[in-house]
Image (cartoon, rainbow, N blue to C red; front, side):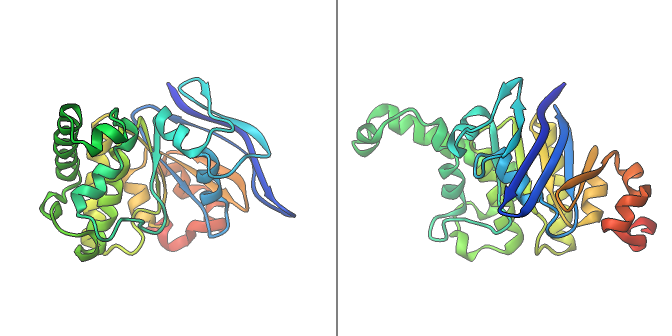
Length: 256
């Protein structure tokens, strides 16, 4: 079934049309990629889906319910979490504590109970630590759990940020260029982690420039060019689409 339905979505910044009448569906249990050249509108579209920007027209429905005009924290509570192009970890916290921060929408204890370390708060802390360890194992970075975020390699930082987003227990995970700056070994680890996340029941929508990764992990791909959708379909069809080749992929990728 269609879990996330984007219909005729548009966004303008002054005279610039960043997203122009874009429609697509993200189906439950799939990995869908959103690709296109720089300036195609991918990050703006992510911001529209997660409440960081407001659409000028069109609609977004999640599990049949409208997401229009919701603020980011409300979108997270609804079941959609995201990462960003640049890693935004708390550098002085451990990797595990960074993941626990992502669970704040699930915490039930208030400030007073937490400050006084009441029984319910202590139980919640133990559960959060266990959940964080599980997510770090899922992402393959459990060995960094007690290390400060500032001291771990770039690839582990990327995976930690994904684990933190998963801490909110989302139904849909939006990843904005998760492979940026990764070497081949780190990108392979990322691809395996994304499959494990999908197998855990989380649907994924990913913006990515690494075409090798996109073609390997995606069930479907949406291609944007100058704000408009120019193609949508499975990887093999996208590779052969003339408009996509002209706009973005190029012969080298097509023949790879």
